[in-house]
Length: 158
Image 1: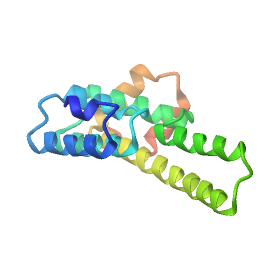
Image 2: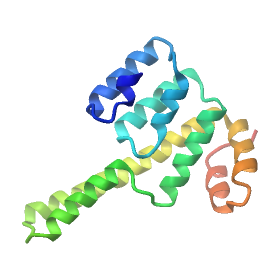
Image 3: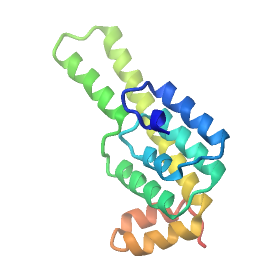
Image 4: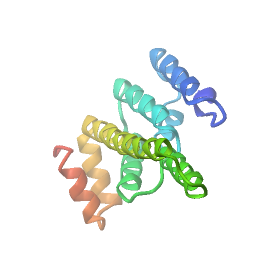
């Protein structure tokens, strides 16, 4: 699990570690849940979601998925967002070529798709445990009507 959580490892290595752990039955589910945070690369988050879907999403998992979903809905930057912003900064500092502008536009489109997929992943976790999702919404987010409405459109009642 330490390798899966290691920020200095490549995302591919971390994903492979998660997949191996999942195939062995997830000895440390709490550590895996921490990988749902949006500052981890999409591939790592997605692998964590897949493992949690396979092994169950408990209360802590639901809370983490809701936190991540809220962060995404509020536009907080993910690791992918930061990479695209760095590219934009580099292009602003120079006279961008046509190819550079096309690459930037493609990166922006890819970013939108990744954010949508991440959102779908978090909803899958919540749909996996809808009673807990509704409970956490009522207790922790009772005054966040926008988030409640957003989630309840995708997650069935208990």
